[in-house]
Amino acid sequence: MFERPKSGQKAILVHLEFPGADFDSDRQEFVELCVSAGADVLNVIGGSRKDPDPGLFVGSGKAQEVADSVAATGAELVIFNHPLSPSQERNLEKLVSARVLGRAGLILDIFAQRARTHEGKLQVELAQLQHMSTRLIRGWTHLERQGGGRGIGMTGPGETQLELDRRLIKTRIATLKRHLETVRTRRQQNRVARIRNNVPTVSLVGYTNAGKSTLFNALTGDTTFASSQLFATLDTTVRKLELPAGEPVVLADTVGFIRDLPHDLVAAFRATLEEAREAALLLHVIDAADPERLTRISQVEEVLKEIGAADVPRLQVFNKIDLREGETPRIERDDEGMPVRAFVSARTGEGLDALREAIAERIRPQLQSFELAVPPRAAKLRAQLFALNAILSESLDEDGNFHLKVSLPWERLRGLCAAAGLEPPPAPTVIEEWEMGL
Image (cartoon, rainbow, N blue to C red; front, side, top):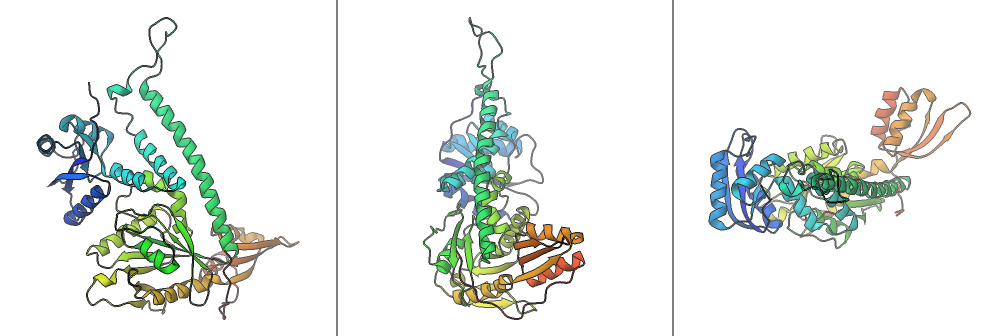
């Protein structure tokens, strides 16, 4: 008979090295995650393996080392910096006599602590329940109690506690998904309204603790909570962004990314992450003082690919240059003269004016609108433009041709027209000035 141990804050951490992983960097981040979650770290146990053990994840000898450390320190919790299956968690808990938590559960716990808005709390609860639902197959004794009985008037098999828990979780997940779909629809309507008013969205993305919220505040004059804690920001904030020529733009601050972000969390935060996927430009904020910045860049790119934002144009912003000796604020450009990298300090304000100019240069082509006639044979092009939310208005003539007013970078529109066998509108020659229409 096995009942789960009670949890607590006194924790033993377990971090193994696998081929191709950066052991020291990943270990440091793991410790920071645990401290952010409120853990009292008593010991960190390391090791190396070629492959995880199917039953215990670690080998039997390493598992016994963890059990001995728990007994010696009085730890109440063992946290692994790795994904654990439900059966591995159960087997480890039996052996070490303490609650066991994998990396996904740790990140979910941090998100639960950080959520402030109603939407953020809904998203975290959904992710937690989806994660928990896979942990209800373990057959623990407290989940096997029958709800029926053998007394008079109670004859019948009843419903096991496990079945009841599954049903309740399934019902709650469905409810949360309906609520979040309403949120997603509202966000989509807001985005469409901005597009119709020719107001592009610029979204901040980046590894957690890269300084996105500090940069957001510095650019917009807002007072969004900013902290050196991992995942200080969970709730997307959208504010007006002042650009040098008064172009109409809004800036969105989004949740930070991290390697091995739990899939349940990505799915639950779909409405929030769509601000990045539907943005006209991504500002990929990078901690210039982080020795692992190249690895972090690659990990953010993986998450952007996972959420469908891999093709969104981006401008890399190397933040915290004040922490690097000899680093100066500057803008780096590609072979065509377009800004691709900005070096700034959100804390001191160095380079922010140049960054605003760079954003304006990248955004201005998207502030153009074009008239386009689409014949019935090119209906696929019309569908593509709708999918991009690029159509501002349309009308239909008596010959069945669609007359569209679209807002899209001319180069992108030219490529779509070429694929459809149509001539694109003339290239823009004058950049128009717009008034903010928020």
